[in-house]
Length: 346
Ligand code: HEC
Ligand code: HEC
Image (cartoon, rainbow, N blue to C red):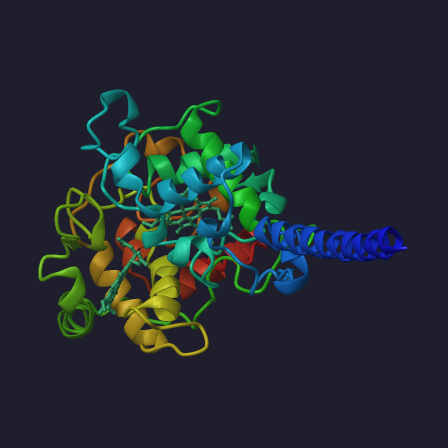
């Protein structure tokens, strides 16, 4: 009788312990699940990346360190801090490819993502492409090397080298949401109304001294970041600038860049200078000393394709070198229209 009672009591206790331990086990399991982030995805809604080419995330720091991403990040670094890796003083003679200390981002602003400053979003889809300077279809690697030999006053990067591969990976990543043909608003530069007169050098100098020299310096030499080979304000002329074969030495090209981008802060929507001011200051800059490129006579095998403000001869017309450098350009533009039926825009 007594025994029965005790055993019933014991069974009750065993049941309680059983369900209690089940409960504790459950708590432990829940704790472990939370501890090891099993519920994580439900709490931090995965942020949907914008697939619009203008507002997509172009911050390489957001990428993880997969092998492919490491190459993209190196491409971005090269683009942003070019002289640290391939500049004349980078400390590794075999990696001295650039002849000056400019960075790609000095002209292709915001690492190639600012419209109307040589926008590089979609660039991969725009290549291969016909190029007048060589009169043939060129690859993206050849186009990058065009800037290496001229804007960077340097030598070509080998196609299979780590640096060229990284540049191309970065540009591919910038192009990931671009339309198939790579054509976007903001590619290249916005055209301006070219004044129908020669450049006014005096006015150009006045504009330079009042609106540009605060950053670029009285002698156009620019200013570097402290203890760094990288420019905070890049040089516009002198031995550490782009050479005379670069697109930026053409007055029309430079005036278009300046109108939408300078003084720093200007945009296509909110320019600071007028077309006339941009034209005069571009003319003033292009008349200053800079490195000279060899073999420029070989550019533009078909001379009718040469932009009218290319500062170096030969030309397929009889206008003077001075007029090709400083205008007026309208008579030259009219000549090409009349004689070759070519509509010149730069
Ligand atoms: C001094 C200014 C300058 C610097 C520095 C510069 N570029 Fe350029 N780049 C230009 C100009 C000007 C163009 C032609 C833009 C135009 O006419 O639309 C151009 C065009 C290009 C293009 C073709 C763009 C297109 O839409 O077809 C690529 C690619 C390019 N540059 C890559 C680079 C890389 C990579 C670097 C650094 C190694 C670099 N550039 C440095 C001025 C510069
Ligand atoms: C507030 C400072 C500032 C002022 C003022 C300024 N710039 Fe710039 N400029 C810059 C910076 C910074 C860059 C490089 C952009 C970058 O790396 O993001 C640059 C780049 C340039 C470039 C292309 C790179 C090169 O080395 O050639 C040209 C051309 C240029 N500026 C011309 C001008 C002209 C012309 C003016 C006056 C109308 C002017 N800038 C006024 C800061 C300035």
